[in-house]
Amino acid sequence: MHGQARAAGFVMLDLVDLASGARTSEKLRLEDQVEVADVEEKGMQVLYQDEAGVHVMDSSTYEQSVLSPDLFGEGRRWVASSPELEVEVAFFQGEPVAARVPHKLSVKVLDAPPAVVKADGSSARHVVVAGGVSVMAPAFVKTGDTIVVRTEDASYMAKAT
Image 1 (cartoon, rainbow, N blue to C red):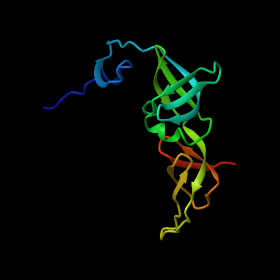
Image 2: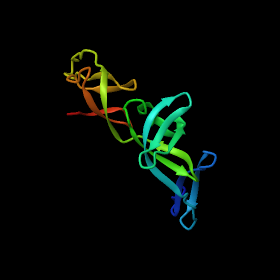
Image 3: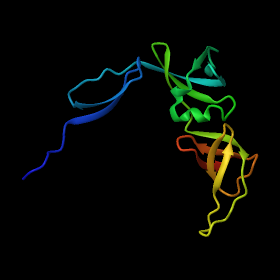
């Protein structure tokens, strides 16, 4: 019988060097040990965004930091969408290394073109919400409405009440 045996006893990990930001994939044996970074997470409020970066403030200490929009990854498009947005910022040795927006947000619809009913009976269309993000929404959503969106994929969840 020919072929390869399964790689039992191995784990594939995606590792990030917090000092340089370099990402690597490693194949480790079960007995190998990895040092876990001591990362402190803080809830912070977005104040504003300009050419210097995203200005955030720790609501409990009023300490302010300027973050690179790249720390938010794909979530950077939501930073300008909601006033006083609360985000989670991860710090390693006092330096911000990652940031994320909430999993769902309530945002205002800025532009909702008229819905066109398709042959299959569906009438969803793209609407533009605060921050300039395009979201696929049902026909009953109108300009000025507030909707709840899932930030990971910019999908419509519900109409806010």
